[in-house]
Length: 199
Image 1: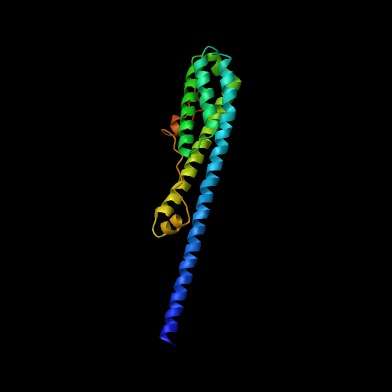
Image 2 (image 1 turned 45 degrees about the vertical axis):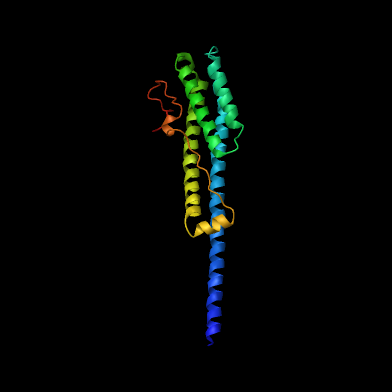
């Protein structure tokens, strides 16, 4: 066989291999990006569930502690900022952290009112909020794991060549201040607090 023909065949095989690798790498980025977005949608659903619980919680506490207007306004404003969306996931995380802190202050107010702590509606809202916070924490971990996988691939050579050529950018982590133990405590001394978040 002619050496030129052999060279052309080798070059052709190499070109096909490079094209196939490029396509496979691009498709891997698309799959990882879609996993990140799917994980974010799961977090977003739980965040909206929390937003829906907060007005009921505020109204219940208001019935017992109506003079704590500053705390109610703080929770309402923090909820509005978080529910209103944010231009970046970093800003969304900051809004969520402010909302979590405001809810914590609302629960601190509630501790001063034994009748409120015994109210069945308040207890149900506490339990639902705790469950929602747990689901948010689990969703955040899943989302961040997908972000880490996507970003690692995007920064790893030679896949980084394909990622940069095709316009993929680093995904942003959704980080909470502290840990899941920092979510509002809902144990008000009711026999061990079955609704309290697990560490």
